[in-house]
Length: 347
Image 1 (cartoon, one colour):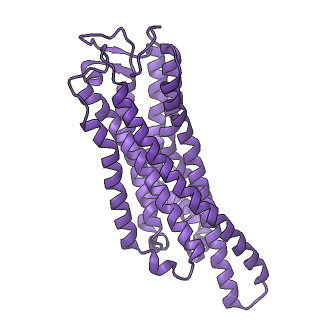
Image 2: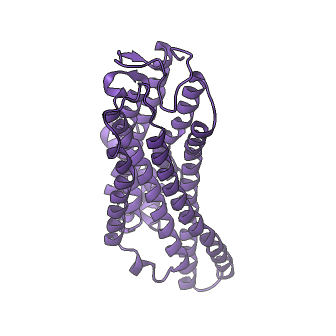
Image 3: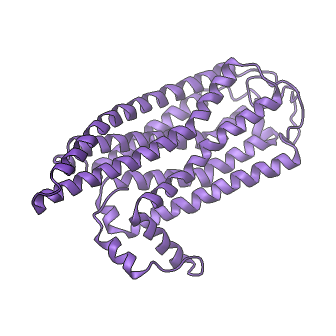
C-alpha cells in the first residue's frame, strides 16, 4: 500500500521528501481508496449517530430533566465535530503529500481538531465519572450538588482547558521548519506527546478512583434493594432509585471501557514511535491501525445509548421516521406508552 520502502524519521513522512515537495500520495492508489472508504464510513456513522443523540435529547423532556444528560449531549456534540472536522482533516494530512500538508505551519493545525476532540472527550468522561460518583455516594444531596448550570460551567472550563493543552505546543513551534525535509522535530513531538499522555493519565486516574468507589456503593445498593424488596411502596421507590443509579453507572462504565479500548492503541503508537526502530511500511501500518479505533470511538457512544436506554432508542426511531418515513417505521403506541412511563434515567 505504500509508495516507497525508505526508513522514515520520527515524523510522519519518508526521508526522501526533501526540499521542494511535489504533490503525491502517501499510499498507493488502492490503499488510498481503502483508507478513504473506511474513514468516510466512520465519519458518516459518527455524524448520523450523534445527530440522533442530540435530537433525542432535545425532543425528550425526561432526558432534559436530568442535568447529567447535559454531559452526554455535549459529548455527542464533540463526537459530531470529530466526524465533521477532525476526521476529514486527518484523512487529508495522512494521505496527501503537498506543500500544505508538509509545512510545519499547517500540518499540526490539521491534526489539532482531532487532538482537541480527543482531550475534550476524556474531559467529558471524567466529569461523567464524577457525576456518577456523587449520584451513588451522595444520593440525597445529588439534586442540590449537580445542577444544569454547574454542568454547563464544568463543561466550559473543560473545553478551555482542552484547547489550551492542545494548542500551546503547536503555537510554540518554529513554523519555518518543514515536516517533510531533513530537519527533525523530535523535541516538539516529544513535548506534545508527553503533555497529552500526562493529561490522559490524570483523567484516567480520576475515573478509576471514582469507579472504584462507585462499585462498592453500587453493591451496597444491590443488597439494599434485595432487603427492601418486600417493604412499603415508598421504600420500594427508594430501591427503584438505587436500581436506576446502578444501571446508569453500569452504562457509563461501558462507555468508559469502550473509550479506553479505543485509546489504548494510541498509547501503543506513542511508545512504538519513541522506542522502536521501524521501516516506512511498518511505520505507516502501525500508525493507521492505531489511529483507526481512536476516531471510530466517535460513533460507539450512540450505539451504546440506543442499546442501553429505551428513551434514546425510541428517540432514534422518531427522528429517523420524521426525516425519512421510508427508512423507519413510527414507534408503536404500546412502546411509546411504556416509554412515557419509564423513570427518567441518563442511560
